[in-house]
Length: 349
Length: 272
Image (cartoon, rainbow over all chains, first blue to last red; front, side, top):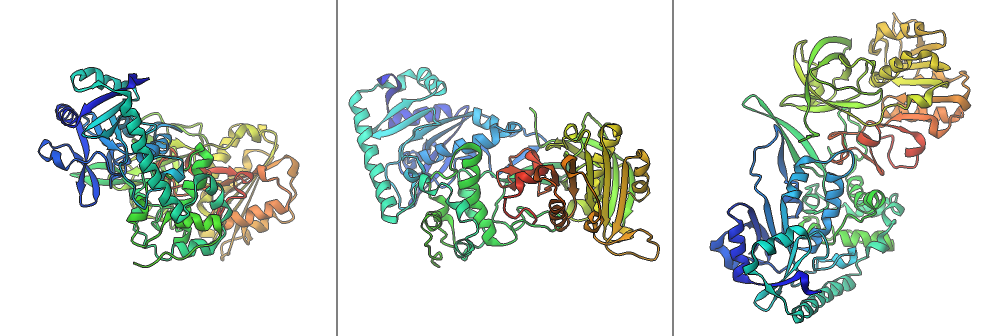
């Protein structure tokens, strides 16, 4: 039962990162104010690394499907394998959607596919929750359950490591001296730590009355023609697209061609369905001419389209869009409005 | 690596000015790229951008593809400035073609509006490849004015393909030279008898025309599943990944761009 569990000290873990950084790109979360950002591992900044905490500012998709990626001519960019450490469960959950879009269907997206295969995911537990966290409502949890190679959980001044895949097992085998046997007691400590944070998320959800994935089922379709809901919800939207960019499940992109010294270059750039041009055709027809229609489309895509095509709700409860929106549009409140038939306009800041 | 965003080169070998703002470009692909009538391709102006078009030529001819293009946006405006000999890019084909096997032995009513006749021309030539497999082929084409008629020289000759082929052209407004029908394309469906139990209708044109033609055909007794409508949305990647052309649970690029009406009837905003 404890075969998949090991102990590693913080010093050994950082040494491991340093060893890996010779032939890998290693990304770890750094604390900046009360936020965490992924940056490339720098041994001189070890004391700023925060492997606990909550999800980082960048959605995990940015490693697999970067915001700007050259797709033509085919890249000669840095293709060293990546190790990403400190990935949180809400981002791991988003991989179901990204994998569905980029690995399945008509064809595989070779750029995503290569990045995905070349990435080792070292996930970690959330060590606290923020008010915007609602993973539990979206059938997630504040600790890794799926889609990771190794997970690490802080216990006192060391980490409990759990192996989940062959890739993860390989690391343990290659660096045996860094990992030691795990006393089953630590698994219990990990569980009680997880219970504490789970309780915090549950409290936030209850206090706000955030609706769960099962309660939301079909609510957007049912409210499709409830124009007041969409118009009120979009009343403070400034079409910045921040909600799309920070969302770990949003995947839409545009292909953008440019000339560089007479050579053509095709970029794949994240796009936003809130932009007026997103669905407009050259002749001028636009199925989503109004801003409220575009906001509604965002909800329709996440809570109707993906459940229909892959039986998965494309929101992981990370809460990034709630924090990013300059118009204070809160996905939890819009969903509540759709379920309860009662809502308020987003408050101005 | 199979890169879905990559294209092959094609040379422009001929350009025909159809109307003041519509041209037909004949492209000679420098590689193997075919299509079935109804499928579309992305045409790239290298370094400028790309746009989706349904080829308008006979799908049995792979060496020469026609694209009939209205100057409407950034890419098409620049494409209209192209000259024979210029090189463009081609990728595709994407989407589902017309199910020709399902059309066999049936009455086929093809209704086009404006530049919407382009994909229908590919269908018409595909039907003509085995013209006797179909019971009756009726083409109804409407353009805004006589000078907006595309394939002017060809359209009238289509009825010579076989005895059971009929062609009816109308323009919204006439002029001194125009001897044909005047009126919207829907007017050509009045007093017209179809055996709706054995007929399919294929419609392509501007959204407003598609809407009224569809309602007219439903009035005439056509079944939803026998109406084939072109939902040409803002298709970009062509493979259902970029998200732009979503129509309800479908992407127009991979599930369409032609849908039978029963599939889309209950979806919101289909005529916009």
